[in-house]
Length: 300
Image (cartoon, rainbow, N blue to C red; front, side, top):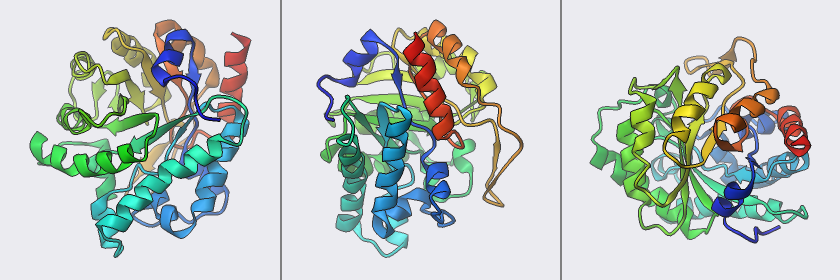
């Protein structure tokens, strides 16, 4: 159902559960995600698969649904022959699908409009490196139109996620300023640094003076890196968001995952103790893990 209060108010009271990886659930449903648009392709070609994935995560206990707009960009849609107006409508559809799914359960459900990094549009793994050779201003100009299109669909929050470096974080914060929708800022990291190598304490500090930012943290990182990162994020005084991937490694060349999973839902206790208030999973974290997180959180 529609939330009766802002997400920030809920975070002030308790820990809130995010969903898991949308792409792995869509793959489990038989969807082909080999296209450069990844899950965003289904916004045009098979939106009901996205709706079904959202409902599956709600049944598992998720309270926040992240939209299928991570890789949705005007540039990416243009390459598929979808011009500006229809592309904006597809971005809005991502919010509408999640909102409709939220109406299928009798509890508050918040909708987070995913805003992925510039590198996601390139579909070459560069979102895990950052440093694209673009200025902060150029990155701001890239992100602003899609943020405006998503904000116009009235999500509850913008998920500025998988951010690999501080230049892009600054650009995203500038682009989101004044859009009328709160945001969380979440970095992809390696150890205690951004993917581009900046100290996390400095990266999180960028959000301190932005009242629009209701949470800061990390996502799409190895689970083993989360505890220290959560503590560093908590030093900002803002609630912390944390949703690592399974621990497997993405091979951009072969477009496949390598290695074994190390995601452990019981880590939620350490996350909460360190300041996390918005928790879940990213790539390759699925229904079973979200259901276990929901059970652990219900136990208090």
